[in-house]
Length: 292
Image 1: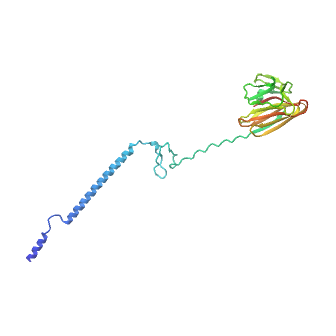
Image 2: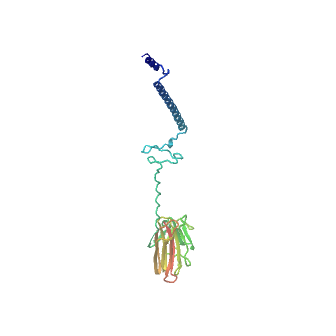
Image 3: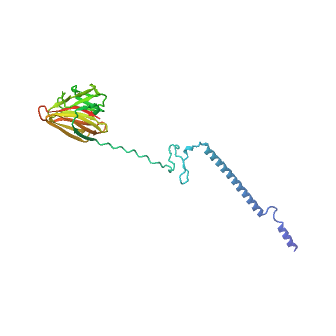
């Protein structure tokens, strides 16, 4: 029995002095927690430094209030396009890169078609050319066969373009013509002069410039022992018209009133000719043209 007790005492006193295994494990766990804490603190410090750096980078750049665009309904922010707000400005309420439609071009005004209408009436016993032609007028015969009298400061839209046959002047016209704004003759109380040309095919060619609006022309003309033919047309194409005036025995006159419209640059062309001579020197005569 004494030996057994000595053995147990020997067993109890055979372990070396120091911490037990449980204490070592606790110590290891404490060290591990401390290391994790230090690593977390280091990571937090790095993250804090990164956030501070990024914040300083964002605020270093100047802020452009004009480049801020409203957020779309989805709630996602809309970034300004490259080149600034002016380069890619959009209408509020539209999605990014969406542009309002371009305005439709104004419809082109269609060209007004040429128009031509003519009527025939008796000539009054006295014609006041200043009243009949506020835009322009021309009178033939007072100064001879080749020198007409024109409206002073008129538009110049009435043009004498010649014609076939030899012109002659006369002063026994059935009607009288007066004016107060002429050149080279300033005024006339009532001249009965005109010009004429004999035989078939002879006559006068006249023109009146167009301006795109409706214009009214009075052509004062006549025949003597002949059938006269008046051909009207618009230069460049368009309507045309023909009228005739005839007297086989004596003189006859008419006021041909022509209303026409054509584009600027076009002309009303008038050809007044002897279609048929019905006597010795059957002719057509020309007294005046007035434009209003």
